[in-house]
Length: 258
Length: 258
Image (cartoon, rainbow over the protein chains, first blue to last red):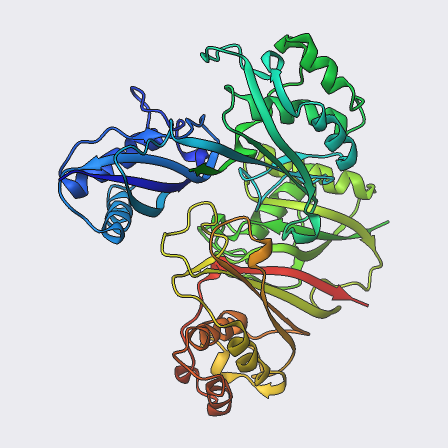
């Protein structure tokens, strides 16, 4: 009898060429598929909730696969992690494995996706202990102005201005459910102003979160007024928006299913 | 006229063989001295508040040197950082440079030193995004029991049981001013129980903080009772204590001067 496994994974995006399997590079998908094959003796093709780019991290990426032999959830998690270690795929682990019904699909059953973008601002010195985990912004950021700007993007819109030109989605329409900009400096272990930008939707366009963050930063620095985000949105023109924020500040946090 | 410079530095201990200059390895001291020589044209010998071991991080390590030419504080900070970058000494920066009077000494003027040890516990999966920044402990830890245990160490004692046998200090007597164990899981971006162990004293013996942490962990896991720390302390015998906790969870946070 076939078992379907939902696995929740964590990875350091800076060590891989993104999620997606490709020739001549090492992707997170390749690492996990090789580890699953090594423990189960079976080639699998992982389906995933959200394909992340090179450099983008995950704390709660979800994928699924089917196994022909029977295992316990604990074995699946520990065996994949042991094989990842043996095969020297650093920086990727399975946090949880759960048996799910055979109509579960990591991508198509997903109802809600949550990303977080981390910034360490108001700091002259380059990042050291926070390198590759936060975007470094020398100037202090005005959180209230950024939140006001972000509020213009909430709801159902044509997000062409925040969509990578390479995006292959059929439609530029998306519903942005929540953007919350949090000054978490009090909880920060490192030196600087620590911001978290939480972004939630059922689904996202290619580079949508990084392009939104790239337009919020000039607002935080006082170079743009918050209303500028409304103008950018309405222009439906990617060239009107800010630059794409770098990948290493972005985390795929969570996927919700029914 | 000679200027004396106090520099506050941050570094990733996993990239260096500790603070101290040594033959055939690259130390934090070497990196900083080469960068200072490159910008000022002058060889310097840095005096430091606390020599840290390989793997131990710093967010507020303090050192001093004298310059013969005149500079502004901003130039000193930015020029050292630019040279560190040019010379490819990753993972070390100067956060602040301040001109101080010529009776200031980074080591001998220090009145108070603060360390913090970070643990990510109650988590089966190996660390990924928190690797080399936290100690990973699979089991959940009892913070109250650890605090009760730590309280037995407060005050003026012979700390032989928590002193590396290689320690060259003249006396095993030290005054432990504060040990605060903080369950900061609510503020944790990663998955797991996040503990910070803050330890403060005028000065420490070699490996003292890591040896204290190594004896608090078995208490947190319920393997030892809190009173065991009193027995270990009174035994004045290093072999009675827990093992030395690994360096990469430890941060030299701050030095206070008059």
